[in-house]
Image 1 (tube, rainbow, N blue to C red):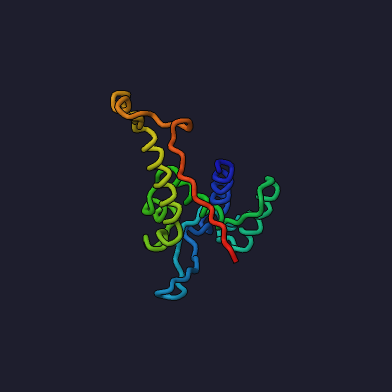
Image 2: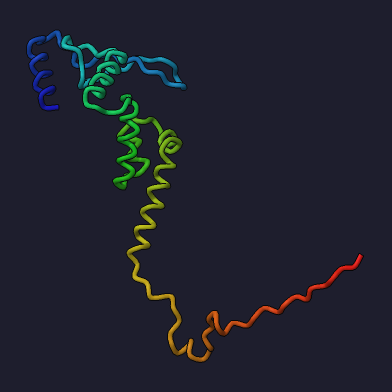
Length: 166
């Protein structure tokens, strides 16, 4: 990241006034349809313009393959980030803010199962910390009753065998 940050700073200095501070990004919303939003994107082309999503995906796939990772996409990275956040004790609200989701409903629909699994695991770990006494009855309570074992168990009554005549 530091190397890219230094490279970007250099590109900005070389471009001078022509480097756009914000670039238009087209986004789709089910409520409003397509609209342009101006953002100060961190990763940009040397000209300062945004990278095309396909170019980013291809480069990511190439780097993942060179690193010996299994096939994965940038979107898989988003899911992994959310999963690690929840595993570290984060909430659905934390995931919403981290991923830039518009509502909690979206995060809840996608990541609620992970959160429930994490909460169950956390509850089990917490329960394991509670000191417990042995569940065996005290010797005084047991002394009054004779202890049964295989030798002094009552034998089950034998069934009589009936001969059927035809």
